[in-house]
View 1 (spheres, chains in turn purple, blue):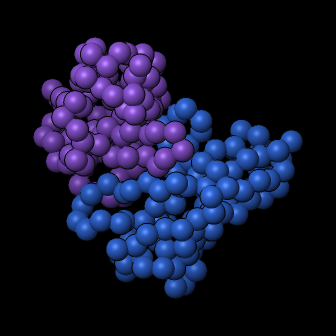
View 2 (cartoon, chains in turn brown, green; view 1 turned 90 degrees about the vertical axis):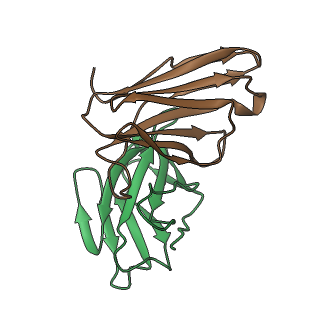
Length: 115
Length: 111
């Protein structure tokens, strides 16, 4: 595998379910990101990890819980979501965080539907 | 801190050159301008980045006038596969933080 991969690509879950999104990057990068993209809205940055440490949390509700066990893997644990959380969730990586001009490499995204 | 303004949408016929202009009146002295492309249901992809004058790569050219208050992404001879959203980004937040994506310009290429 090359680049940034995300699994699953599609996910349908009920409001009481618990699920996890997985992201893996094969680029040797040190920073990883979670974004949310709702229909007809700009990308919203959710979390930033740099060398496994969370460096940014943009006031994301606690029903979204990120985990970064190492620089290559990033998870987003989901529980008791709301229908308005339905969106495309994108993972990205860059050589290092804390630098606005790093090229970000995005995964294909997970299309999440909350019923 | 700079914010960007770009057209919401544009239409073009195949084979034409497309120019998308972005305004960033408050760009700081040291800021670069970055453009990304996003196809439907995919993550954005870096296209080009520049500081001044002209930058060209295999995908596009970026023209930046001397005052740097705007920039123009130029796509030569577009095809249907260039239909996408194009984002112009400059730093909007202080410190070393990721660029903020706006609404971008939705380019529709028509046969």
